[in-house]
Image (cartoon, rainbow, N blue to C red; front, top):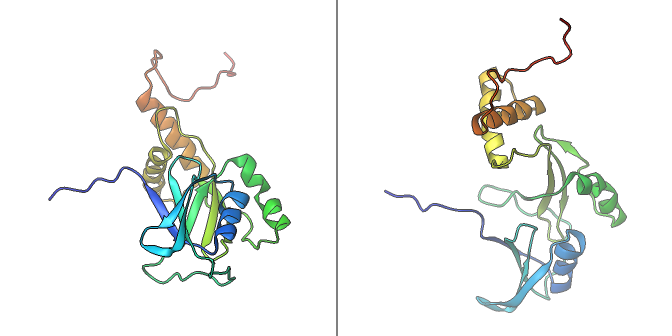
Length: 196
């Protein structure tokens, strides 16, 4: 049996409210350019809006002028989407609380996730949205996933309960050592200020 090998998320489609509320949330709050618009080809009563979340992939939203925003949390039972997380820079993350509060949007406040910082709030239809900010940059030629799997292995080998920044730092060092040669005879940590 052979796999159907995925190569990334193509798009995610959500059921949104009316057209303008959807544009105001996805572009007006989250800054995702509105890049494509057509009818929902499976339901002529709905629109289908496309937004770029920042990586050239797509978030699409089915809209209907009869749907209005509601404050209740979208269902989270098994089989439902719990939340969507979007990557933001440290500069944007540090402004998230202020910018959400300027609009009267309730939120969780910043949360420490060990390898990232997060803040949560709901979209107009009650879907939980997370803004996530990594605490590290991967070495050139590596991905965030490369660092995460290496940090996981280090954490497990040390018997630590959850990931912390020390695991990330040690993972980055290990990846650089494996990926980049050096002319040094030893790549061990050294003290350049030692005497004698």
